[in-house]
Length: 314
Image (cartoon, rainbow, N blue to C red; front, side, top):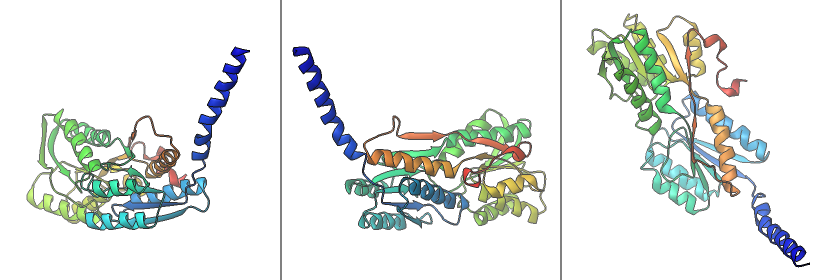
């Protein structure tokens, strides 16, 4: 009898402990605020679309608000304030400055909002979902080293000082360092992550340096712009590689351009994962590791025809 009572009380206790969790799991996802670096970049548009699709699967009536920070920190602070005032349940944040954004992140979390950093880290966020950017830079620049047989003049065309870009450049440098015959002519120019920025930067390099054998650009828009500048200045036989695996780069790899490779990311899958992780955290389920890294793959002229592209296109 004593044993039965103990067993019964254990079950009752277990049930009473389970009840709050069951109620917690009912917390609905009513609204999400998304702030990205620039909606002029198709990569960030795809992040917004992926997040919206996942949110609507969780709740068909979920409200999604996407805004472009345009790489302006003050603008992003204001956007987060607006999300807090609107009482969103979750913020997907592509931080303009991963450290300086921390006060805004803390303010949002203090208001009971789950903050998930997407594509780049953000100090104080509940979790981060991003590509393994060091690996992406390594893949892209190991390709350059191999193409140049370990010797030549290379430019690292840098970009906005966010964690993903810093990681890509570091990965690139570590890959190039394994080939002592390679000389890095420039590695500190911010080409703004845009096609126009890439074009302007490339014009500068080709004017300054009589011999450029390869250029690593931190994203695909810069690669496309760099290719255009080289064409305008009638400079051929330059190997251009980048990171993103965007639709634009698929076209570039299939046509007569200097672009030879891109380490692909999957912004659609990244955003879907971020919303899923955020919804779990809202309901008391924290990920085992708050830093979720997604592996890149190298897309080249040789394998582009079998490349599936960003998930949203499937």
